[in-house]
Length: 203
Image (tube, rainbow, N blue to C red; front, top):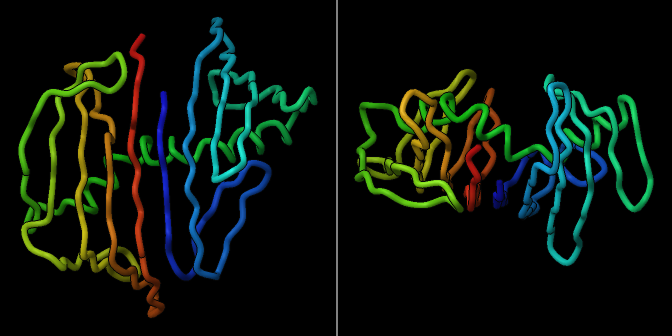
């Protein structure tokens, strides 16, 4: 699986870096391209190769992960890390999967039925996978969407879902939004937030 994720915003933004996760209250940009390759699987464990590019820097790591999601070992630059530290480092590289896991909630929030149009359905490919792609866009912009504790006002709102096979939840293929978020009286600008699933290998 290969994904690209980029964010530029003001206010509190969750930023996942190679070795840490933190909140930043200053304007900034985080742009990450990440590839995940399954090297080995057993009845209990996945061995995953992770390649991350962030600006001029890059990372190549290998993680051994239980099917529960707990990383039992993490190897980077010849250093083998185990225990909770391995899980923390592995989790820091899994930000794109948050969007996939929460895709149904994201779509429900960003495509309310009263102001969203289905902009068409096409067939496409994500790597070796053939998918049916459904595009959603706001009927008119800007659009204000109520959320718990505040609202989103979006000047750009496009979402694309990909159906890999019948009976399986669709994947988030791409997301592109811009605008502002007001949360408990504080407004932050969403200068740009984009997510793109570049390729997917089905097994």
